[in-house]
Image 1 (cartoon, rainbow, N blue to C red):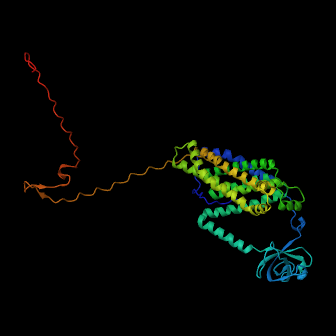
Image 2 (cartoon, rainbow, N blue to C red):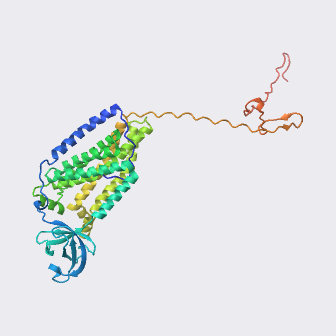
Image 3 (cartoon, one colour):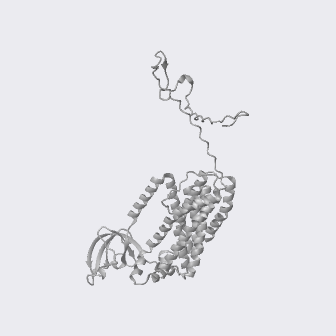
Length: 467
């Protein structure tokens, strides 16, 4: 799913590309577009009727209600058998017995949530008498209102800061969710390869998200190419190292999924598909940032060639890379934090914890995704430098010479009397001895000191002695 990162990528409206660049990008991108569309058509489960709910063996039906009373009592029917539970009375707002109340026991344990009067809860109805307390279990809280409020605040913040581009980003996010819900989930549930489905879905999301958010331009196309190449590398590395590490991808949730489906699922492929989709949004941030940086360098100095653009873009990418890799690692570590705490309490060594199945699969996902992010910098920078070097940069108009302000008039100088001749008036600049009637004043050059005359000896006349 596309994730907006905290770096600015806005580069204004899409700029026209030169004919050679359009032809080059068409040759590079068209096969990938065709492969993505054909893959989506072939992988979509046309006509597949997926069983859900009771047909899939899920007999529990959610029923909403509100807590009206909480009291201590027994764990048996209607509060019998001691005082080891809390009796939570719930008035149901929907279901077969809407409007009636049931009293559901909840064990008084540290693992049980606490309920209070006024809580909006969800009951699990397993069938039977809809008015009997034994037919229900307290399953969860209702979270629709706070989550809707949070979504509204998120959309308002994006629109307030991003304005029209923020609206495009929200639309792209919605389309990404549509691809996940209407393509990825049905295709995997129908038995298709999770890795292949994830790669095709990543291509669809990239085309939708990047072009809708950043516009149709040469730089956006370059970012798409860099993202897809990096995703392909992540997929190859994931397949290789998950096989070498003998990761199965089987955890409690996956085992329950396999039992419900009734047919085999590539659980290792599910692990890799999650890796690809999880790294998708961060790769978007890296590739768009690198492409924009190279384009701006080319615009600032059209004389830069491929080598100079690649070197300068790589220096920018190194600064960006450290924070992005840390973001991905912390995201995976945060998701696996309860699992890591549980293993830490087991008394195992760090090596045993990291190589256990559930932790090792998170480590592989993190490292494979991070390698893909690291590779995205040189891959995207090289593509951007290659394409931008063939882009025609419009010559910036030379600035017109600024008009010189008119010279300030010389201050008036009061004439004074000549000390030797009172009838003669002295005008001009008395500090430098400037007379305006003699033309512009120039600082006199110092005259060189006269060279001393060399003493010459008189040559004696013939017949005279030199003494």
